[in-house]
Amino acid sequence: MTPKRVDREEKQQRIVGAALEVFARRGFTAATIEEIARAAGLGKGTVYQYFASKDDLFFAVFRGFVGQLVREARGLAAGAAPSAAARLRTLLVGLMAIDEDTRRLFSLTFEFWAASASGAPALRARVASLFRDSYAELGVMVAETMRDGIARGEFDPAIDVGAITAVLIGSLDGLWLQAWFDPTINPARMAARFLDVVLRGLARPGAGGSEGER
Image 1 (cartoon, rainbow, N blue to C red):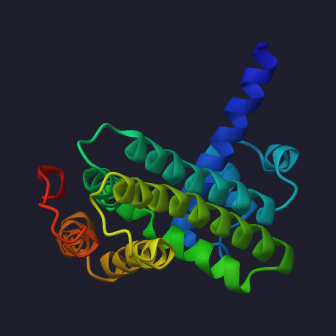
Image 2 (cartoon, one colour; image 1 turned 180 degrees about the vertical axis):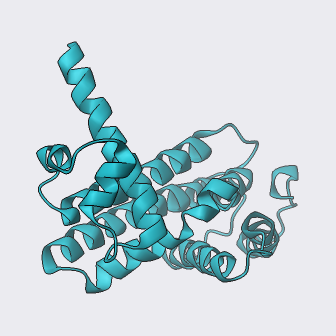
């Protein structure tokens, strides 16, 4: 890789990082390219060399944000665990382990949701598509773990994997929303307690609980 290519990628990442901070602090509508350029330590013209519009830059921030969450989910899902139940717990509770940096970006998540519903048509379509793809990928991880649990004899083969997957993922969004409005809420702890109940319901009748479920 040539120094010129490295410099270009470094500048692009610097712009995206600055935009993330500005969008989180000011919101998409109020944020300006001038502010983002100042935060990145670059000229406004340089920003436009990399991104044709504020919409394009916003989508780049969103894609990076979602990509990071998906990578974290993949890592959690791939971790070693003694049972399917333990892997499911690791994945879902791990995604709810919110640190202060993540909590600081909660407002940015709402900006993404708003853009998927009321942004310019082109941006709305791009954001909605990426949301669908990320939810689908997370859903595959959850569903595959449950199916593995059925194959292992841990989970009841009569469970509706698709329905339970949808409800579990929806619960994650709900916990994030509550944590945004009430900083005293600990999403990881709540998710763990919720999964205590869910995993008991998923268990194959007559199967003893495993250490990984607790």
